[in-house]
Image (tube, rainbow, N blue to C red):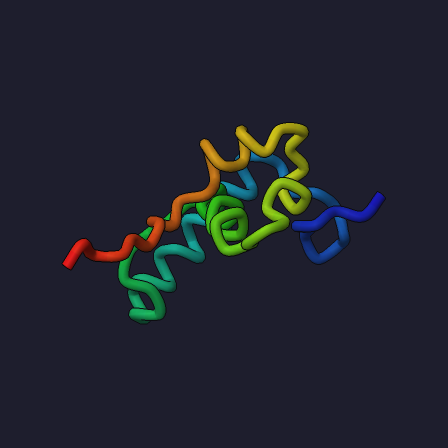
Length: 83
């Protein structure tokens, strides 16, 4: 079995192992000023969904387009000013 996020031996991380590595990565990124604000791993999925114009439902594997739109499409819609 192939894991998307795996350790050096190709094995899946345990929940605690992943959380520990994620926190270490976030701390390093903040300290080196590579990023300004912390974010969660789940935020990456949401970002992918909001950036995937037209095929977010397929990319995220949702049966309903309404679910995708409600949960993951976070970009504000552009409106045209009245004047």
